[in-house]
Image 1 (cartoon, rainbow, N blue to C red):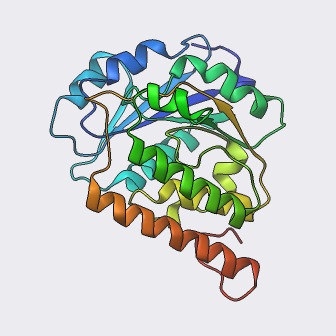
Image 2 (cartoon, rainbow, N blue to C red):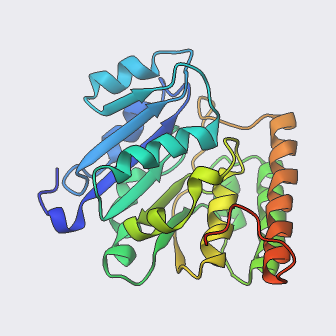
Image 3 (cartoon, rainbow, N blue to C red):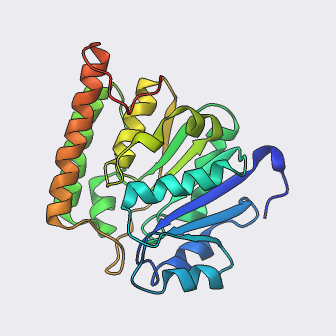
Length: 249
């Protein structure tokens, strides 16, 4: 692990039933870059907890499933206690290339950005050949175009499971007020934009596998509607008509 305490980097993994993919995700992480890896098991029904312990990660386990957002809250609370320079959130489902963490955190180390994420949408051909189902690609592109127009940004996607935050970002954004559900990431991004934080992205390969996690239809529909609601809250905030609790004060 890195001995450079000035740039202490902690990876957090919000895990749920990740037994089959956790080991592969862990093996790709550059160990000389990262100081600690924290995994929060959100009430998995498989052997995720046992695998994480065998890999000698720092492991926490929720006795009950709190949801994707609730899992991340525990991840960040535990990471903040360790006073890091950067916290990387990495899905342990092997959809995201963790070998690229050095490229992801470099702009934050250099103080060019506060928040970085890895984008799987470089070209349509690469994304679909990487295994992303066409309906997911279509929804991702449609939402991205709409969200970019509302938020005044030009990201190539908004739904990445590989993100890096500066310590300042985690202290400034009121993530503890966000949903425990899947819209947590959308709330975080919108809140960060409203707070004037600088957000960047790097391209990463698209990787979809049968054993990787995926949102089913009804939760996906709820996620889509919730994401649109978050954009509406941003518009109301910008117009000084209503200030949601998701925005920093």
